[in-house]
Length: 340
Image (cartoon, rainbow, N blue to C red; front, side, top):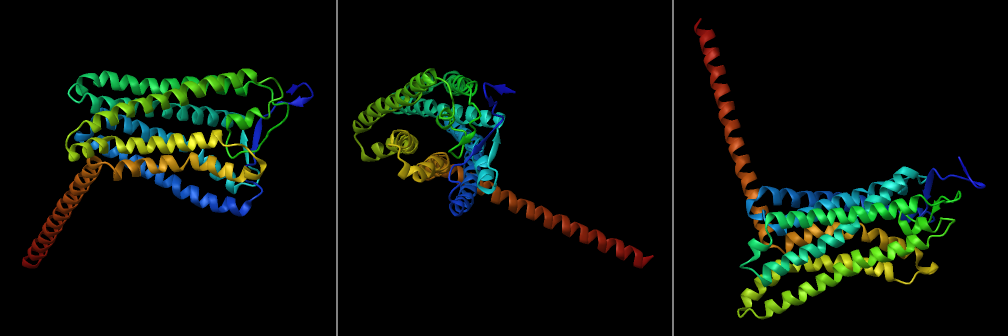
């Protein structure tokens, strides 16, 4: 199929950090370890939230969504990055590239909205504790989570379709580790002003506005905490939102640093590594932060471990009883044969 004097692009070559093979081998091992930690940590957090009835609250429902989102987000890019690191050809098909762009854009957008929703949940819990069960009822928090996913997917669908229908005019070498939309738009040989406009609007709606909502929520939260008379009460109230605040700072801090940092040829390698870290470090730290800074999660872990240990002891006791019974049966059989 021809487009002008150029062949239609059927695959892309992801050449990010390709000039540093030793660094790629090191990053392969590091990313593989971190990816396994992400899968294990976030999966455990989801399982714990599901198994412990005390964690069946809006806060842990949103946290379960965040953990599932982090698993999907990293799974949409890290496996292909690992393959690229160890592959000599470093190619990805047009369809795979399109899907990767859709999922990374969609899940990243969803996380922005979801973090704002979680900030609202903490605002209601601390500023209106008596009305919290009424305001944050099951219908509302499930709708908030569903809309977070829907908004992220709609944004991703629009941007991905508008980017991938543009002509690439035979250019298929992407100077990046993943199919990032900005890297692909550099290969387009037609006007991309509409794409830039939509990306700017989406950045304001999905990055700036949620950040402002989080900021305003925490102003009210801190104001309410400071009005609490006892130091113990203030500490307990702040501990319920400190984990979320830490995750917000990590997520938005790294995102704003990556996208507002001046680009330079001298810092290209560091930009690539920062971009890779942005997609791995935050999802890896999220379950650790929520586990270490949250007493309810730690108590739930202890309860499940104690239940598991108790069950193990019961199973061992049953095994011992069964073996003893089998030994007794063998003794009676042998005795009966001897008597006969």
